[in-house]
Amino acid sequence: MEDFEQQAQAFSQRIEQEIVEGRLNFPTVLDVSMRIRKLAADPKASLDEIAQVVQAEPVLSAKVVRMANAVMMNPYGTPITSVKDAVSRIGLSALRCLAFAVSFEQLAQDHRSRNLRLVASGLWMHSVDVACWASAIARELKVAPPDTALFAGMLVDIGQFFLLARATDYPAMEANIDRFAEFVNTWHQPVGRAILEALSLPDSIVDAFCYEDPYGGSWPPKDLADVLFISSLATEAPNPFDNLLGVHRPSLRENGVPGVDRDTMADLLASAESHRKVLLSTVCG
Image (tube, rainbow, N blue to C red; front, side, top):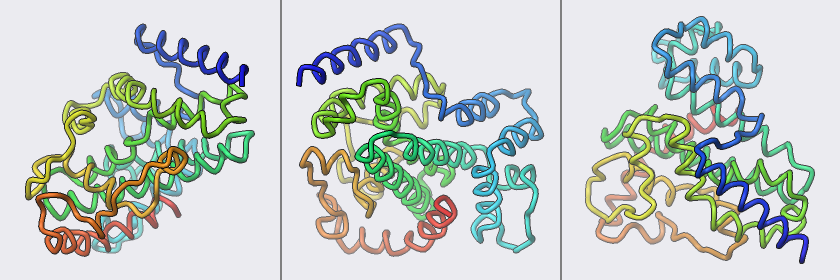
């Protein structure tokens, strides 16, 4: 008990200091994602340079080529076999989403504690499903570019992933998973905001994470923030931290959204389902 209190205090102080100083210490598992992010933001970076970074990560390379050959990206069915052509086809937003998906998947396998491995794996699946729903719903409603929605959806749990990665430095966190969940619940929003700022993302993405002002139920959804809110309720993969905290999120299919006709929402989910399944298979395959 005492060990947890001491380590939680040390962890909190470390995070708070990094946020104040604007220098979050990103886990090494996110190296490839961060390198791709920097290249994508550099107008002088060439497609060849980006492709070289992708090729250095075999799992990411395979997923990029797989996505480029998916029907929605390659409607004419011409086989794409090179990473460079695949990156060109899917675009930088989708590439960044895949890079984070691979990083988070590797993080899920990186924990000494079986309990944290299970939490990280569940969180990865939750993020991926939210991302795929976001892209599919944005595509149906045309309120945001689907690839931008895909990338933004992948970031919904990034504060929690960051804290999971850093927890390996604090063994008491892994040994007291329920109390660690409470710790994450306290810190994930400020950490998530700090990460979004550190990534120098466009305002259109940063503004979509409206923690204090969620979707109010207007129809149709007006922006990416609304899409992310609906996607988070549509996901069939629960956030494991919600389960640990005893938080029950309402089912979108069963309860709908206040102010929105249930049949209207059901029609939207049905229309988006096939696109979501293709994306899910691509990212998870």
